[in-house]
Length: 195
Image (cartoon, rainbow, N blue to C red; front, side):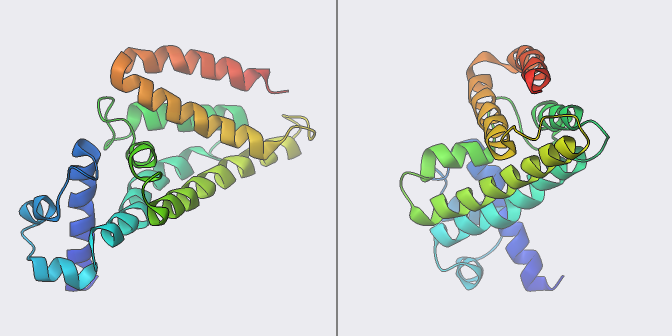
């Protein structure tokens, strides 16, 4: 990695940390610069404005932070239900970056910025669709292995799983970590009802 690439990556990583805890609108460029030791000139060398940095944060920093956990679980074992369950469990309990109090950075940005910025909405939709396709592929793999009827709509099930994740992340902010455990019991039951 070149020095410029390292600087860009550092800006995005620190921005992700701050925005995850404070929210996008409550985090200023100056806040980000204070944690990176980068000059304003260096910031504007990499990003023409805060919105461009925010979109890059979704496609680069959040992707690099969250995507490996998703990929690790999906297709890791023979049973698609167990793999999807482990993906959910890992994102809720084992992910080293995300906390119960702050929820999920992607979910937070969907709520905060998708209604306000087409650039954010498009970047978040792209990330969401990538995740949906990964889960859908896992479900199709299960269908091909005879674990689920081919008549089931893999795309809709994948979207349901993502919707459940978004809901539990938001509710966890209020109800706490114990809610994740009770949710996972019901989530396992949901997966078992898929026939």
